Amino acid sequence: MLIYVAQLNPTIGNLTRNTEKILNTIEKARLEKAEVIVFPEAAISGYPPEDLLLYDDFIDQMQVELDKIIEASKDLFIVVGTIRRNKEKKGNLLFNSAAVIYDGKLLGFKDKSLLPTYDVFVEKRYFEPGIEQKVFKFKGKKIGVLICEDVWAHSENVYKKYEIDPIKELQKLKPDLLINIAASPYCYEKKDLRIDVFSKVSKTLNCPHIMCNQVGANDQLVFDGHSMYFDKEGNLINVAKGFVEDHLLIDIEKQTPVASYQIDPMQDLYNALVLGVKDYFRKLHLSKALIGLSGGIDSALVLCIAADALGPLNVLALNMPSRFSSISSFEDANLLAANLRVELMDIPIDHMYQQYLDLLSPVFAGKSFDTTEENLQARIRGMILMAISNKLGYIVLSTGNKSEMAMGYVTLYGDMCGGLGVLNDVTKSLVYELAKWINRKKEIIPSSIIKKEPSAELKADQKDQDTLPPYSVVDKVIDGYVEDHLSIDEIVKKYKIDETLVKELVERIHRAEYKRRQGPPGIRVSKKAFSKGRFFPIVQGWIAE
Image 1 (tube, rainbow, N blue to C red):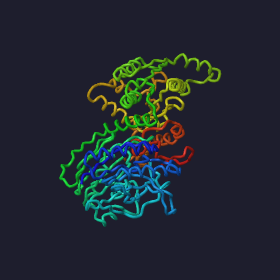
Image 2: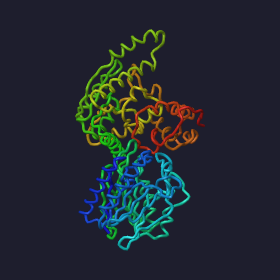
Image 3: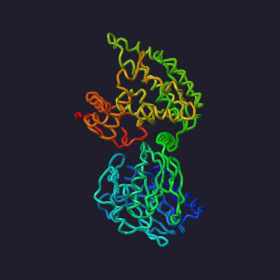
Image 4: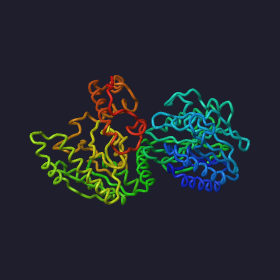
């Protein structure tokens, strides 16, 4: 049995275009002599469609597109993710389903049983769970079909406990093959966990297991692809490429060597960020990005990502020095732009800054220089970036990182302005690791940028550590408190950090919630981002212990 696993990149809501992509793939699979074709979860709509599902005409059109796929299925067995109405009129009005098709006929649907409603998922808002586990017969084989979360429940390494385990229920039906269609988003170092979970599933069912995953970035989520094929012993046999459309051609009747599967977490993280930028622009029909290039490491990394995602000719860097900007930062920005072949424009802001100081001097009389004057510079830069964005049609990429967003070490209406926060979910520690990874073969980011002590350069001789502990400490608290939901006492014990300092940093995380709420959407690459999947009140009185 020759199976074509189609790892596609849909655009959410573009039902006609997504279906065209599916139909084109069917013809490609025919040329490969495939008998079975597998598409990802919600392949017709793209995942997650969210409140588009509340519109009747959206659901109606999905059925129209599914009919086109059924019509194109002559002599083929196809499994494709779709969303359909719950005709029972009980519970939620929709099912998240796999349509199972053969030779121009719909054999039936397999509805998703386990509906994740945690982190970035809100499936119980829309869907009713499927009750029955099924197998579909094809060429003497019993094919089990499950959807994403249905498989994850069969492991201790899960995010939520469920009352049922679809794998154990399916085991009673003795399938010869499991097809798992998925829309499993990327997060840093997740694939190791996937392999553990999926390998265990194959061993339990004693049959091969194919996971077809969506690829592409949709808003803040990045789907990495990496579709997988396991034999019945749980050996990983083949893996599709990550972060690009790809396919696997699998013959389950043949003995295939076990795949050699090496993971470079830095390369995957970088690829996720590049794809996040690329698809944000492509799917919104945008092409050009504008970046404030300070000579610091964050803007340097964002410029590298943007140049790879959009091409250097579609990126404009803007250097906006003030009286506090160092000559080395100016030189570093110019060298980086030259290395990337990106245009760099210089617009000094000191005269504008002085005009603001003069204008406000009657109000500020008798008061010392503080963050007010620092933030004025950031807001002048933000205003210039947005003016050029409006006039020339560029989208501003914000350069603040997760550590700064956590601490509130960013300026509202200043460096937080823009259409997309590229590093919103990347800690300062990972920013440095990514910069070193970029330079692994040759120096692209000037080494002086990586070596220099972090500074916003908004006052004389300013360093980030004037008001913050070392980022290595900050990032441990972020990992513990934000990502792992540890208590202060647990963070103190795990990372050996002073309790008073941990409390102070946790309080800063909560105080900065109002800032983060007003920032641009960010690309989610960790297991717990500040944006999608995290719900905290701005006004609250909880003091962590």
